[in-house]
Structures are given as C-alpha cells and as structure tokens.
Length: 110
Image 1 (cartoon, rainbow, N blue to C red):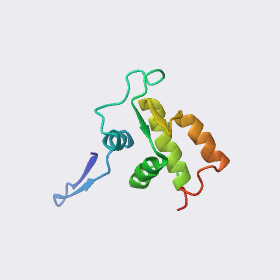
Image 2 (image 1 turned 135 degrees about the horizontal axis):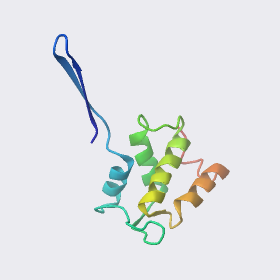
Image 3 (image 1 turned 60 degrees about the horizontal axis):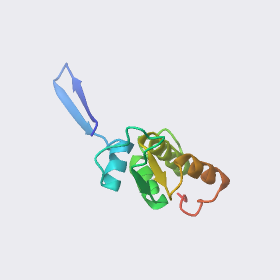
C-alpha cells in the first residue's frame, strides 16, 4: 500500500496518509492469485467479470486519472492487459472497444 508522510520541519508535526493498493494488487486479490503473467501475450492467468472490474475501478477512483467511471474501468482493463488477464473470456482490449460502443453502459452508471 502506498503511504505518504508529510513532515513540517519547523514544528516537527507530521501527517501520514495511507492510499489504496495498486490496481494490479487489487486484481491479484480479486482473483486469488499470487502474481501476474510473465508472458501476458501468451499465458493468461485469470478471468475477471465486468462486475469485478467495476468494483476495482470504484476502489481506485480517487487515484485514477480518468474523470468518469467509464474511463476508470478502461484504465483497470489496461492494467489487465499487462498482467495477462481476460475479461468475460476476452482480451481486455476487446472489452475496452465494447465500452466505447456502449455495450456495458448499464454497469457503468455513476
């Protein structure tokens, strides 16, 4: 987990902020695996449902660059590509295209 410590050197006050785990750590936890694939193009290590992807995106929402839930989900899918995952039995890039086409809009309401 990312931890940020801010120290005021004048009065020696400090603030500790604990962030959320990385998207890859949340994916690993969700699938119950130990790590991502060493060869993500050929070896697939797990399959996520869209509900699981949305759940992870909502957890990471504050830390993700995308301003909408749809953008956050696409960013989590991108992490899945580099980890060697499938989503609904498909390559995450295919699911990203489906999101652009509006096929998963029912799940992506804010």
